[in-house]
Each structure stands twice: as structure tokens, then as C-alpha cells.
Length: 141
Image 1 (cartoon, rainbow, N blue to C red):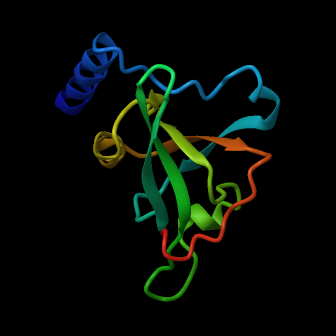
Image 2 (cartoon, rainbow, N blue to C red):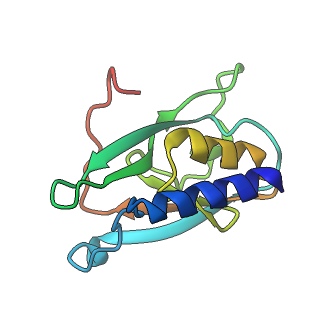
């Protein structure tokens, strides 16, 4: 697919410039991180709020981009959407892949392009830090 080739080329260029994926699996934090995936089989809005967060590493000068779950929306009927109904996805979890394609190191817009162009069934991969307490996100979502 054209989008897939574009994203891989863009990621390769970012790596050549010294922009590398974030070190989410740093050994010091490995015990507190868990990875999981959630599969969606029906093509519909997931009703999940995502936010791109950039983090600049002061030692290397490298900016890392993360996609963070900040909440959920409801369907017009008021019912929960598929993401919230899964019972697995939590606020402050990092979205790191879709259908086994890595999103780590992509900008928010690049990651959203990959997600939107992915085919169903949709398999979203996440990382959760068990030591993080979700903040009060009022005004941030």
C-alpha cells in the first residue's frame, strides 16, 4: 500500500536524522510496563480519545512522539463505544501499534494516517505503566 510505503520511508528518514523511537522498554521501567492488544472486528468508530505528546530527551536532544489514550466518547445513543466496552483500554495507556505495524516514533498525524488506513479486523497494541495514576484530565482531553 502507498500509505504503508510512505510511512516506512518517513520513519527510515527520521532514523537517519538521529530521531529514534522512544526507549519505552528501558530496563528500569520494564517491571512496571505491560503490553497488551485489543481486537475490534466490526468497522465502526472506536469512541476513543487520543492525544499526541512530544517528549524531548535533554541528553540527546531527540524528540519522541507518543500517542496517549485520554478518554472515551459515547455513541449518539449514549452507549459506550467499542474501546471503552472492551474493558481493557485505560486512560494514560500508550497506543504503540496497529495490526502489528509500529506507531512508536511516528508523529501523531502519521500515526492517525496509519490507523485510519488499517483494515479490519483491527488489532491495537498498547503499553501500560502500572505505576501511573491517571491524572485529572479536565481541560486536557
